Amino acid sequence: MKDLLNKSNREKNLFKSYYCAEQAEAKEYSNYQQVYQQKVLEREARNKQYRLLKNYQGCKKCGSLAVDAYDLHENNRLVCQPCRMKKEGGSSSPISFAEQQKRQQLESLKAQLEQKKQEAQQNYQAQKNYLELTATLAKSPQIQAFFTDLLTTYAQRFANSQNLDISHTPLVFEGLYWDKKTGHGFGEMGRCFRQTLFYPRHEKNIAIGLNRLYLLNKFDNNRYFPNYPQGDFSYLDISFVSMIKTCSHEIAHYIQLIKHGKSSCESDLKLNNGKYNAELAKEHKEFTGEIYGMVKNSGEYSE
Image 1 (cartoon, rainbow, N blue to C red):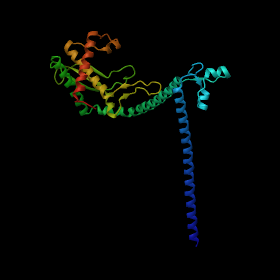
Image 2: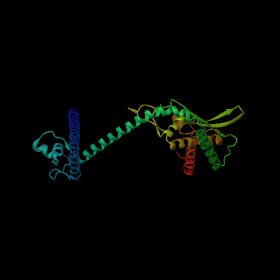
Image 3: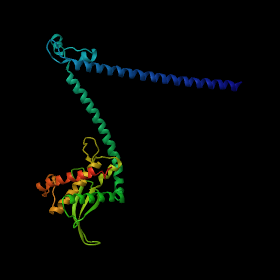
Image 4: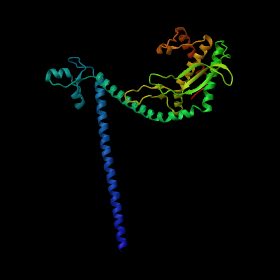
């Protein structure tokens, strides 16, 4: 008998707990519904105010487009603010459709900016981890082969289009280098230079190297943030397209070194390094565009 009584009490307690839980959920749902309905009403009121302003042709008496802000927001009606001020006095501010539109646009821009800020900060945290992985990835035979093939293939193709013999000074891929100054007003995303090898045999060639930061796009990072995105949101474009453009830029330097024995681009003017030559810089820009077009239109290289 005692066992039956205990069992009955347990069942009552379970039912009570279940009932209380159901009540709590029902109350929470009710509160949610009330908040939701309130938000719906507020949104409908804003939309109504917006439509009123949009269709407002101006005061029939004075022609002013300015309406009383208080009456608009509290009573959903349009009252000419200048006329009301003349009649009643007071300090209620005027608001026009154009002003309302500007406010909404400003709020939208602020929301977009905040979203971009959060995305940038998340990317910055992720790239710190990926930077270490790029050191290993840079030594990968597949990566080395990819860039060697890309650079030498299009250097040869463009040289052929220029009727230029490059066999006496071959192009070699130096590799992917790391420059911690990149993005802080220094550093470079690619470089092209003459070099002389003495071992295993004496020969001269021209080398092209690329910044290791480009490997970050292997981890879906198209932007490199040198600083934590707080007040400074500047970044470097490290997308696949940007990398191809840098390769084209350096190949153009290689072609000019073979053709003229020297090379120049717009960067020389910005750096004020004494190497700037206007004619060579113009030619370099044209070469870069043509080489990039060849790579892009070939469809041989993609992300």
